[in-house]
Amino acid sequence: MKDVQIIELFWQRDETALTEVENKYANYCFAIVWKILMNREDSEECVNNTWLAAWSTIPPKRPSILSNFLGRITRKFAISNLRKNTRTKGRICI
Image 1: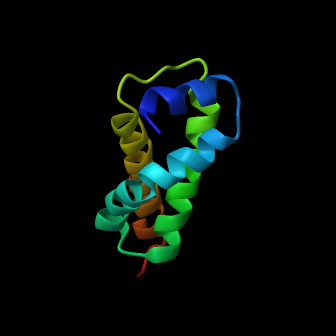
Image 2: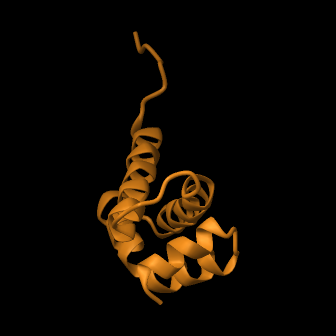
Image 3: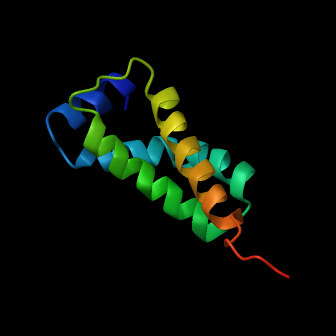
């Protein structure tokens, strides 16, 4: 299915949009996350969060390039997850 058709499904609030976007872009988004996190569970969670974020933002936004739109969302989730996993607790060792 073409990106324009997938975006139209999002605008119609048709849940098959999620299936179509996952079929077409799951590997692409997973590759983005994997290069940042190198953790399967966290990567899968970020990709699933991407689908939810796309569902929440496409109306009113209408992305011109769906792959870039999804990639940007995925990367933000991955970086946020990386920061959460690598931050230190505010402990002071004396």
